[in-house]
Length: 426
Image (cartoon, rainbow, N blue to C red; front, side, top):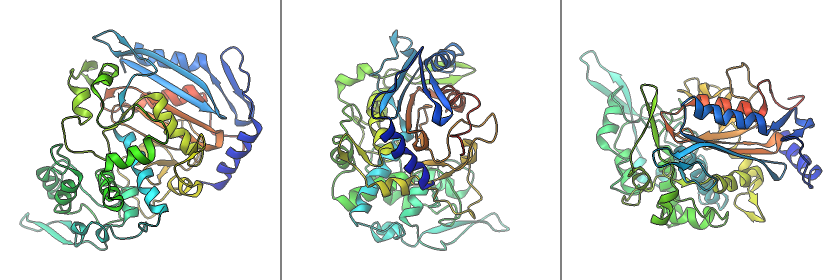
């Protein structure tokens, strides 16, 4: 992302120390080319529920150092009549990944590793990886040594080459059989099982989303000497006062969990009462780096505000400003043409555990936003983004699967307006 966006953030913050008065539900920001309209956002949330795309939704916005919007619509648990609330706890799935990235980059700041170090320097099981090389004339799978070692940079930008579950190739089939992400073993066992599976491609060659963030979590354990969840609690969650965010939730918190819904034949079906406990790993050994955290709007907003604050919130520094900027800078070489489904998220590249917007929206179908923003989302259709150019951050919650990108399009359009293409001169 361009340095000018971070400079602009500082300038805006200095110019708006005092709260900006709002009139008629509007927070007008003339310098940025859009206004935050409570009426428009309220209507968008209500429509998501009315259309049957989600049982309940909520969103929280901070801009220029203050809260400018909180809104909700619908039910957190439709069958039990529990409305969506500010303190509702939801499964954030892959919004866990940026937390893992921050944890690992804290250790990078301490000089514990180099970004281009081979992963095998710290996790020897990943030495001498093989790559699936197609089948011969008789249909027998062929393998060859990887062209280079997997680097830690590869882990953080999803270019390591790991396969995932499925049957598309023998590498996928081997991954499925190995069950590295099974909940009954720990991160160390995940690493051992994964390292025995051949790679889908050479490191650095393609962008393929998947298990590499769990290997990041394993590195955090190895380099820090602490269990991964304990490290995150001590160095991120506790300092940021994220009191309701955890992999393993106390029983008292389960009453605040939103139900998870799955769309079948155009209708939402509740997944069952045991979902909250199971997905939060209370009865399992695995603490994944890629998913598994549950959180509230206010908790995750504290994490997002820390990133908007260039690594600091309320006088607590989590990362250096330069480290946040590095994470939020596109790390994909232009030669990486195969990017799986990433282009579906718009004009984006990928940094360290975030997508990074590289240009203004090109079409009406693309999500609204500003160049230089960074963001990620979760399988149950949750979303957060950090927009330094507008000194804004947003956290949006829903609990519906499969992932529904139309919800993200609509909430961004509601926040920025349908015609927004970035700050003037972007």
